Length: 209
Length: 209
DNA sequence: ACTTGAAATGAACAAACGTTCAATTAAACT
DNA sequence: AGTTTAATTGAACGTTTGTTCATTTCAAGT
Image (cartoon, rainbow over all chains, first blue to last red):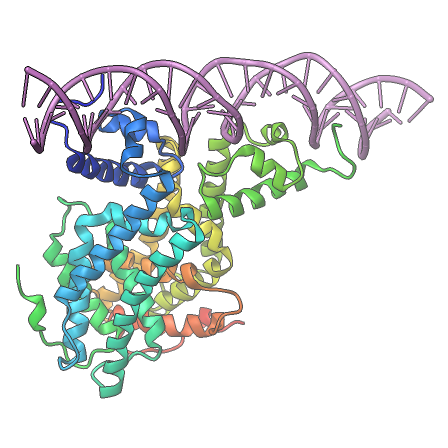
């Protein structure tokens, strides 16, 4: 057989992405064979090469997409400079959790499989990660400058905060004991104290459902 | 040729372990071939099967060993119950950093490649991880009970602390800007605040070089 | 010097790998 | 209805994979 009834390039590409994300997260990039991936969507292995030139390009695409989506969403959600550093930190914290909770597979990929990228591809993804991290550092720096926060080493604190928050995805399960909102609140509490927040007041970006 | 001059089973086994740890950390379990591993130590691939029945057993051995070493070292370093919770938390924090800094490859393995274990092997390693985590939860619980610490959710806080600390190994480089001691001090500061420590006094287990 | 057994080998296995390509089908367009 | 073109296939490619096994070499024990 060849082209199948109701087939559609765009939908197929999305299906490949979705299945690849799941399979790589579950078994690892090297452990996922192109045949197995194709089978998952009911395709022959050869069909995959219409959409991605090779396996490495597929991985890169997933990781680049994951980071681009993060940066895009952050650009929309972020609270900017006139706002107090404390509010901006709360905004960052809640955004990070909210954005990553439903994307645990992408999170896992994007720092488990960085090593499987070619050097150039790695550099591209790494640059995006740094850009995100730098935004957090800026918040902590500003808080340090105006006395609303107290981190002795903002660069270190930024890494600590991100590791802390990203770690949530390793244990979170959609119907677990804690709701996303409870997790968010608890973590914001911890992060605020960790960064030496003087007084804790609610930020504007945090309240929506 | 066959047996080589100056060869020694025990030394060879150690060499296999070391090389496997490095290769898997660098390229992933599935990406490491037995031939490549053997070549790394100047051996034929068949020789590996004298020491490990198969590839999976080798991985399991590395992960089990990594956890066993952690639990052993922790049993020796830990501060126990009569001691104040704050001191025990500091002891845990400093121990965790000190123990993991020179073992970044093992750390990486032991939560990147858990998925590559068979279910029974996974359960065995996971049980050890839980045991370690529970010790931290106990400390936080005790601190909560006697008022020296203030974590609303000790289980959550324990995960946050561990993620935070373990994250260090992803960026730490032996000759980086910060010494292990500076990192230790900075992180203890953050962790203490995160867990709502009332007053920060030095613990006995923390001072040695 | 002789025997024994640990240590390692090279060749072979079937299976699976990523990838290419000419051929084929069905949808879309005229 | 006929033509074009996007979507997919099956078969084949050369490699590489984990693993087995009879064989060989060398060190240690007597």
